[in-house]
Length: 177
Image (cartoon, helix red, strand yellow):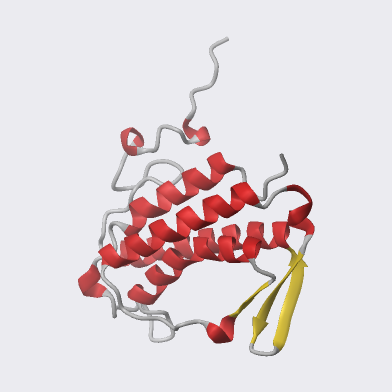
């Protein structure tokens, strides 16, 4: 079966991200590291929404940025509930749209203007990369707020190897010879 993102990879990235979102301090939502930066709450909300883009991309022919609801400042609990729904929808879409369906065209629009079009499978991989980029930004925001960071691909200054996800292929011991 041809799938846009292998489910084990998707599940690992989502579990890692959830551990990060759990640490977003609700009371610091308006904080920004720089006047030109997103507020923490908006960046965290974007990260919570982005898995849903995978579902939308696989299920619909386009996403229209002009129809978005805009950002708000939500509690960490609300962000986690949003994220969990987004992940569930994305995982279901990854399982249902496979093979030739990944070659169907998908477009990003802003109102009546098509910004670009590409095959759904390529768009979904781009969304995952874009998502990982924003997750990385979120780690910097949290570090600047002195929030302990969870293991992502290995230990952090706050969590050692013992806290790293056990299903992470980067952490597998080499086979003994």
